[in-house]
Image 1: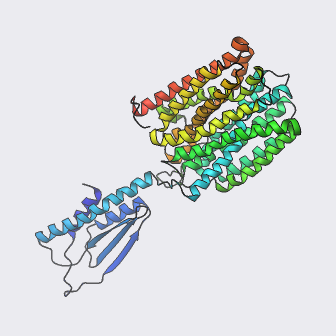
Image 2: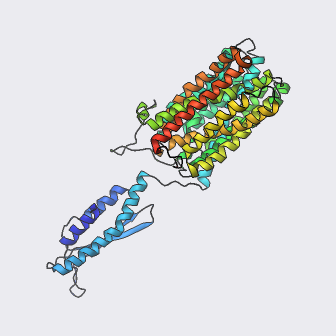
Image 3: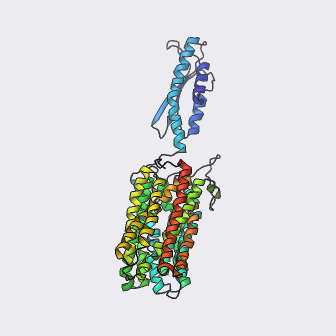
Length: 526
């Protein structure tokens, strides 16, 4: 028996019959009560069952917002002689039926408070996706164009530096983007997106403008890696997290659409740089990119917003999470294996993204024309961020990640490793690997979001990115060091095997996370 039913029966047993119209009643009143909270609904339900006998008739109407349902609960008290047992039983059944009708609405309201409704579309929600789209071009468009900068630095400003030393420029940038995101995630959860998005826009533009003046190793480290990395860190969590406030069932599709921006930037930026670097030079090429970032910052600042209120404690005050990662999250082994999988995925991902142009140049292709190869890779990435995101909502997000990681392993070892100086095989590898790796990046946030409360997405995602940050910090320098060994095709074979093995370990980690969640059945949606 539920609390509401118990109180209803107590009320009915303590009530007296309503007098006939000709006998009259003492003063009557009607009270309408509307509550937006579950606790208020329970309070009103309990008040109807207080059993207090008064000389007035009370009509209480309780509305349950968000469910479009309202049920009337009538408690009638009149100072009359006690009713007969037959009348009492009839009245008890009548009032209990009112509560039976009211109870589902009550439970639905309580469930809604725990699992909030999501718009799943509409103008405001899709404008948030558009704002995130523009923001991610600023971050991942540059990341996906890092091979252009690596190739240019190694033949111009940093011609005397080793491949491993140049690799630290890009690894440090990625490390700051993800590691500082640990602090940004809880700030976003508590205070929203406005301040971090505005600050990031300023830092990203300033980074490119100062990079145009950089000529030495330490100057490039400070402008590209540190300043640009801080800007990316402030933008990364809000760009992903805002989508989680407006989409649940369709989050994979919405996030996939937004993350296509990284691939789109990776298509456009290399083509722009291929034309500008020989004609305008490095300084003005960077400045043009900076002006593009200003244009992208406008919709990002206008449309990225939050909707759900911060999670509150028993005292009703917002829970302010620490800006440091919550290591207790790793007690959930599903999350722990997922985070470790992200680490090895980053190891495998950024080696080809950074070295593919240098690989093509080392195998007989013109370095400037090889920029188009990066555009092929990112074109595949655009498709990879939409289609698997759509399929993930239907067949399971972790299921789709396992498929796309497997495809990464196959393309690395079966296409890139034996490609040599074959342009056709290299293009095929670039397109297919771009498709598979783009899927990974688009699905990672929704997989993490599947393991936590929606209002704690920023904290969970940032903690996962902490693991990723150490992978990105070490991946490119390790690749550069392996390249310098000169083994297996002048070191390129060792680099490719390293990337393929990293993806294989990531596949094992995500398999374990899925098994811990739903078991071994491949047909289970998760």
